[in-house]
Each structure stands twice: as structure tokens, then as C-alpha cells.
Length: 111
Image 1 (cartoon, one colour):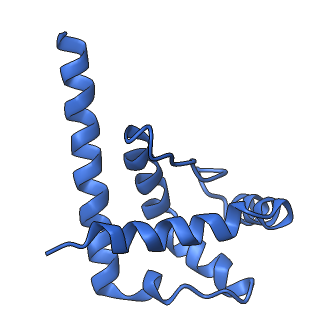
Image 2 (cartoon, rainbow, N blue to C red; image 1 turned 90 degrees about the horizontal axis):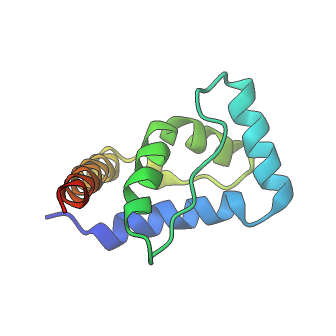
Image 3 (tube, rainbow, N blue to C red; image 1 turned 120 degrees about the horizontal axis):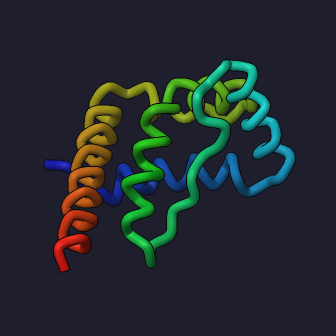
């Protein structure tokens, strides 16, 4: 059984560590650029707009290895990003949220 709150707490905690300080955020964007990544930043997530959860999780999941490497270089390792069971839970939650986003978008178009 997937505990979504546990997975989201890890993602939000890591996200906040990167975005909370302007210097760390700039360093992260530079780190992404140096690693020649397609993405240049993370996406904000808000509780009010639940569609943003799927987008944020998708971006976070795709950048999980880079984020883990960046956090290690900052002296703030996130062991959950290296635990296979946690990563499986994150992947599952990401897929579920993406499917819900697609369903919601499809239902909005029909009305």
C-alpha cells in the first residue's frame, strides 16, 4: 500500500531545501545547466491547484538523480532518493497523478 503523504513529504521537504534560499536555488539552476539537463528548474506545487502536483512530481522524478547529487554536494543528502522502495512509491505516485491530470483535462474539454 502506498503512503502518499510520506512520499509527498520527502518531495516537498527536498523541494523546499532547494527553493527556500535564493543562493541555493541559483546554485541548483546552475548545477542543472552544467549537467546539460533539458529542464532548468523545478515546478512549484500548491495544495489549492492539485493539477500542479502531477507536473511537479513528474519534473522531480525525472530530475531525482540530479537532485540527489546536488543535495549531496550541499552536505544535505536525501537518503530516500536512493532507496529503491521509496523510488518505486514515488514513481507510482507520479504515474497516478499524471493519469488523474489527463483525466481531469479530458473531462474539462467535454463540458
